[in-house]
Image (cartoon, rainbow, N blue to C red; front, side, top):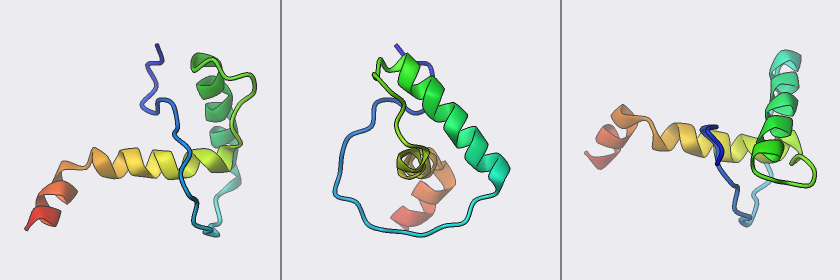
Length: 72
């Protein structure tokens, strides 16, 4: 079982979004994709751009202050 914060990723209907990332962050995403793929038994790593939405989703879900303010 993966101890990464990001577990298996479900396919969902995508919405196109264009963002600019620093080169260092892109390299980290590539490395993360490789580790994520290995720990989740994938034949090949997911493309790094496919990790961005689940990472942001996980970040937002874990932000307690955001959840508290959203309920108000």
